[in-house]
Image 1 (cartoon, one colour):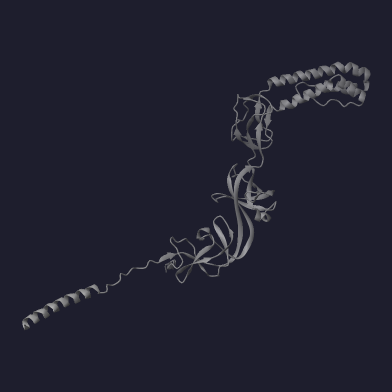
Image 2 (image 1 turned 180 degrees about the vertical axis):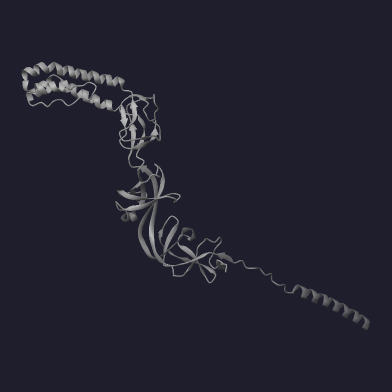
Length: 373
């Protein structure tokens, strides 16, 4: 009996030991894994409020101030001259740009001059008899009459009787027909109205040029205009005669321009007003794209930052005690690449470069440049 009880107690003791061991194993606390916190290094700048000039940047294309389209008023074959009719050819004022064959027209003009000379010769006996005092001036006109040169003005008539006699013989009609042909003959030679360069040529020597046909384009390459659009709210900043700075896109060259005209109408669609700026320079070319900077008033107690730093167009990240904080800011003006901010506390640490994944409360470390001693 006693032996059986001992066996049972032993089994219970073994079972209890196993149960206790499993319980302890299951409830043993495992150490929590440790992770190293990643702290990003950021670049900052210290706010120092100053007077910030407001610069309005706009752009446009250059256009030659003196530019003409070349058209023909007569018909004829284009003949070569001492200079090629090609883009890039320069001409001095008064030089022949285009010359058309005028042989047939010139022969017709000479025939009309001959008719005028014959008509004057025919009335000379009647002038000697009826107007002896006027004979000398008409005789002198005939003696100086040259078919190969432009005709001179007819002698002035001193009485209505003389004027009616001259007109009745068809002298005035023949004279003005000749003058009209002489004017038309001059149009067979197209001369440069100013020193310039040919930028477009649409015909070649030997081509038949028709009346009204466009032949090319001629510009003065020394003076240009650029048309820019400025928001109507800044119209007070525009003033005729005011100097402005003009840059090329690479900002490698600059010129000083002058406002010469301001449109009196505001564009309904864009609410902008056009200003025309005159620019001179040897490096300028027709059609060149330029940037114009207009200086407006200055904002006092303001700070200028890059547009890339703005969050939702109205917020900036600051660093306080190694923690990022997102604050609201007052944007008073926006340039192409920067914005002007007012209301920032002096000495505030702003992010100077965007941080990927930045958020309010993020732990950061401010970069400090190490210097060798």
